Length: 231
Image (cartoon, rainbow, N blue to C red; front, side):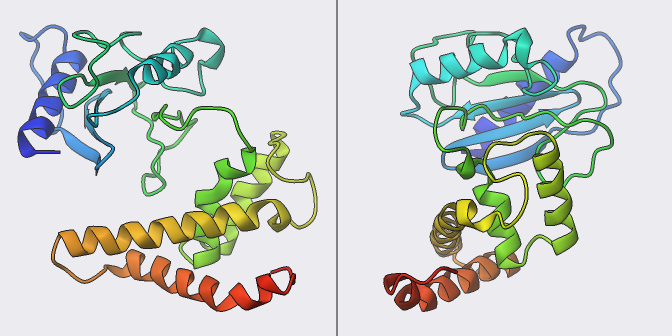
């Protein structure tokens, strides 16, 4: 997104976090949580604002927002401040941000942030029906690539199983279910790493190189997979 869009999102989130503009504000400047081709997320205080990319499926987005607003998902999904975007609900894009409120102190779903207490899922774009193994594709890929330490992966997987997560068997080796999704996510991440670093005119950073190396290892296993051997 452009700098103007990011600034507008920050202003929007700041106004939503401070409904009384005359009240003195000591919160830090708005923070960009994500800036990707499919959307940009900016936080100010206890509020985050998201701008979806042009071409976003508006009916699908509104359905997901309604789901996030359902009281049955309180404590799981971050509810929107408004069930429908305020301006034109049929025209997704940078000028129709989605606004959501973070409980105080704010919780974030990104793994690099270490918040104490329960977390809430803040991004509704991946909500839908399908094989639940794909829900674990990203952390499984990070673990297999070496980005997640074994103890972190073990703790995450153990908590998922203890909560009755359906993606993997309750005990034993989870990789029969996770192998294909994790490989696919690794290949996608490697492709995005190449595209992003090339667009920015730089060499891949450490994390991007890790995913590229993991993708290369997957490529070296293809003959084994063709022969019907399991990994």
